Image (cartoon, rainbow, N blue to C red; front, side, top):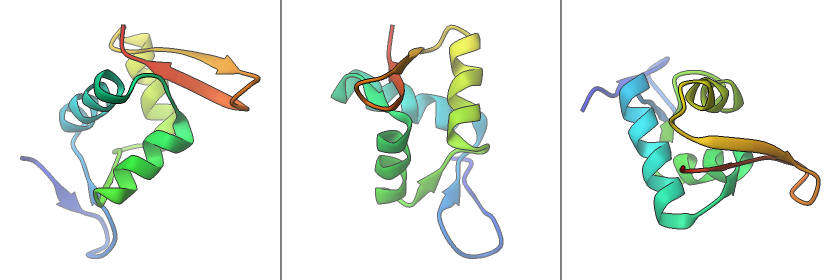
Length: 82
């Protein structure tokens, strides 16, 4: 597991590969989630994406790893596993 501490305190910053696996696993287990829900679930496990969460998720979407769209109902982005 390639986790590192940023600044010595706070959540563990996951590597890109590890964060991708974490997000895909969350979406497969729980179904569609908002950006804020993903951030909260990561925080609950003392983890953090290597980038700002929405930027990281957008990169994953561009790679075809996840799907996402703006949701008026959820007032933000909604993400899911293809």
